[in-house]
Image (cartoon, rainbow, N blue to C red; front, side, top):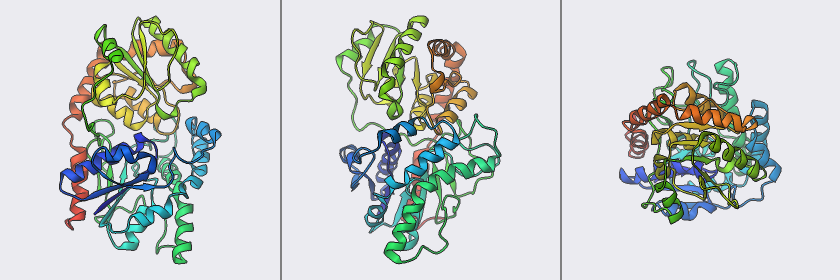
Length: 414
């Protein structure tokens, strides 16, 4: 039995559901351990589900904490937010340990490091499964500073790994001392403890960030872990008619980081930028607005894999998963980063020539967005975006990384 530990928002969990589905496809037995709010979502894919009693949806999060998390746009703010996250992780550490009972391999998100120590205690392999590159390399900075701050590479990885380790360290220490009276032998941050029994797999295209040549040979990266929808999506009449009646629109959506207080301010910026550029727009996840002009509609949740291929460009917050979906769809990106690694994806998009220059949340104006739309819809950027998509389509990251897990489960690790 392979147990996958993950937590967070739906976007955080999605790549791990993709792993679980591919494990099943390759003949493995698998279950996903995550917050109880995602029971229906995980089980809708036919994946076995074990619930954690608390997750970010079900616990009473301080609104100020959420606001801080949405705006942690420099390393100091990030450290402060990650430090606050420790108390929320305490809800699930003991449960994760118990729910791993009966496992043969444990696969864990970097925010769920209890998985590594449970596996060590049980004498079974563990796999660090990261939704972004996170291991030390001399070749580039980590995703929390890439394209923004000039710091020694070694320090940028110490910062990234330190923040992720901070989330769970205190609670792992508390749990082990309570249950066993002592810490595990050689206790410490597990992220660089990579070997044949403890491989690491990364969800990232080598055409976006190439696999560094100085990584441990047991770190595997060969493409994103995309989740195919479990049923064909059928849009409602409003969305279908809008897509059919004119040129391709621009998608606007800022995911879970969007602050409701900014709703009308951001809408007005989008409306004016669309008017300036003579384009149409689809606004997702910002609720409804009265008296919408003919060139704009609002929508709720629509699968990115379906919608992004039907738009002219995607404007979003730069989450790793949303960025990957935009790249895969072969359309230009306009990224407005709010926090954490989002700045890195925005910068990389521009470097690759598949998107406009980054517009930070604080600098989002009518003028800046109008300029970004014009740039993103230039012929050169459209061609580059299509070419990147075609290269990514030849990667098999999900299949390759799943094979590493399956081989461990069957005792075939190198």
